[in-house]
Image (cartoon, rainbow, N blue to C red; front, side, top):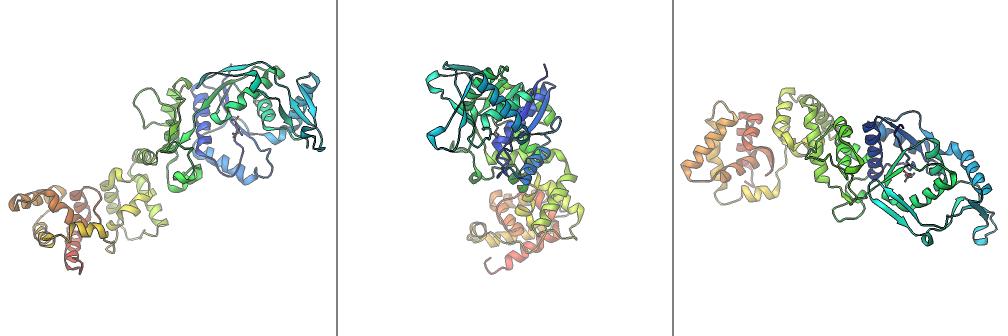
Length: 438
Ligand code: GLU
């Protein structure tokens, strides 16, 4: 039997990461098994399911590399078939017509629950049961003649030959209804796997307020598709060893439903940024340089006279501090301009201290004598100064850092000095010493 999964989004204009994670799991599961991954657009809500909303879904899938087999099935094209099935259910006595609530608007088709408990084994949650008395009859065709979600969803899964339904656990309750429909229609049900919710640090459903919640937002912020893919795949699943940074192929090879956790998965922006940095590194210096350059152009920080070799040296110096392409411009603009701002707090802490400027003058004199101006040489020179004057390296490092970069945080000082070069470093220290604030 060919394993066949599907992603069945209702296009609303945005693709929430919870939904795309379901798509990722369906894709990983079917690719692992050498099966098929299909797309069904549940576009029966005509107002929300605009062509633009559908395009957003398709773009998100494409960006993440979630290739689908065959053409997408648009649920709206299946209406006649849904109604046919409803008629059959009526004919066999599994459904009945009723003017619900006596509104006079006409009759709905209502599915009759079997009157027995319903149980199934969820591939993630294990055995689940719902008592007969908690299973109420439900509408499958509205009085206006439109099929309801439950009917369309089940009938389409049967039409498409879906063997495994992997979806969010907000659908667990629906699954009892769906199983009753499968039984009445006389079709074998698929395996169901319900994924735990994605939550924020407070354990609440993950939303826009937690940073970004839609695929498009992560893309706009500059996340790499492979990093978002990797992070979402690990939200609720693990390969069973301590690997974290993985390629798509490695995840396909390792993916099983048995390793999907049933507890809520916490999405942590810091972790996501770290993951992005890891995948960024794998892309290599040329691509990082191109990405940072494009980001700096958007930020209005790029200048055509930035030397390519210098640009690459800055990127190498920043190393893992670049987690998003935009980080370079945001954290390290001082490499590219003499008009860098001085952070008030750092100035106060490092340069307004008693004796701080005298010390900086001594450091200037020391650095003036360093030749060639390599990281090792400036490091050795300041160490010698520390030993001679009985000061700690911390005392010496911080004032120079603030003087040449305007901030108290950044890459290793001596690497930074080497990249900036002697001339720039000395000029910046002299300028800082001459500033009225000191
Ligand atoms: N359109 C439904 C949703 O997006 C489909 C659920 C399912 O995967 O069956 O929630």
